Image (cartoon, rainbow, N blue to C red; front, side, top):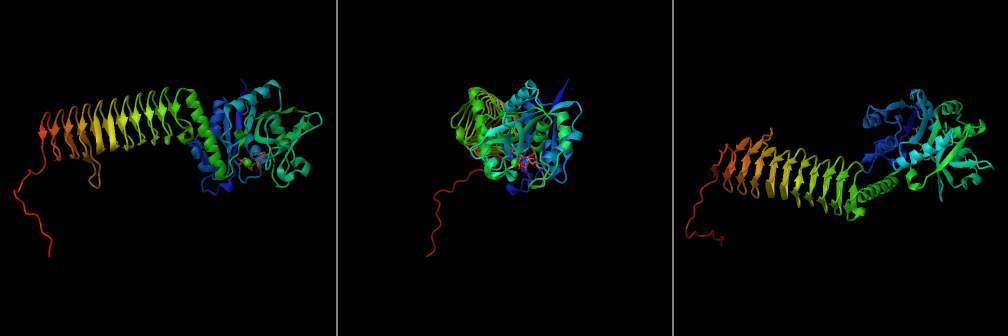
Length: 456
Ligand code: UD1
Ligand code: CA
């Protein structure tokens, strides 16, 4: 079986980003640009991906992982040189190879699939992704012969005034017959305005050797946007987020205002969930169906069941069961696990805490490193004192316990089943099952108390 591959050029520095981070690692909709390109290739069922790395190569490789091929291009002598370096590393059984850039995050798998289909159908040697641009400045222009056949690509810097008027541009994405590409690349020269080996020169070589080069016109010019600076980065981010919202809405999610909703690419949301404005859903977040999220909520890497209500809250790296109620103004910190029907109300902070089914923490509490059973009520203002300045300790509250308002639970401590704690207690000893614990000074009333007087 023949295989397809992709060579993704990611060796450049990206000077105009003005950044310590390599350009291709800047994120669009929560995912680095080069990963977005890789994902599009994978969704288009391209078998093997090879990245050409150079500037901060180790950083780029670490971000992408070990499941890909890498070619090191050092120094960077142009796009043709990048492909020269890559081809010897490309596995031999790949007979169709894409070349694309790591800085075009909006490229879709549909376009790659359509290019591959046309390439195969017309038995082309090279299919070039092209676009019609009103303002083609900066792009390579497509040159055609009198019969309309593509005979070359000329870079802006090498073009004549006449050629600069051409509005058909090279998007920098190609599909090649691998063996032909190997032959053409071996003949590349760098006698041009930039002294670089241009990949685009292979097109002229194919034309002169009687090979078929055709073009596939991008339906949406945004798809080919190459990101060079942070203004374009923000533009791409907006397009990507919009695409994500459209996809979710088509799948049955209500998004009240897509323009103020920031949902990253890998987030999943169930049907009939409503997302209100100014909400951020990030990372690997999975939201169930029939939930109501927002307004003003920020959720990162959390998983929720169905029917949850979460508003004006921040949730990080945690899990919620079904029908939980969270907020307003709740902060759920990493490794918190809420069972079904848990309430974490306003001004509640939970950290690394498990809460059992139906338990309620309605207001003004901090629970950290706690294991809370089912049917527990945590009164207003109660906190775990889980940290002695050096170490963290666990607080255990068993099923059915009632924690009175303003209780301090000094960990490590266990409150057993159905125990009852009087309001205002500082608990530092185990409370037995069904017991009442009172740990506060007894009230004393002084009758006819004379208030202090102001000095004359
Ligand atoms: C290239 C095309 C141009 C096309 C445009 C589309 C060439 C000569 N020109 O120009 O026709 O219209 O893309 O965006 O190919 N890179 C390397 N190693 C290098 C040089 C570049 O890995 O030695 C990488 C860069 O990191 C970048 C990509 O290749 O991701 C494109 O390089 P860039 O210099 O931006 O090419 P353009 O001048 O935009
Ligand atoms: Ca570019």
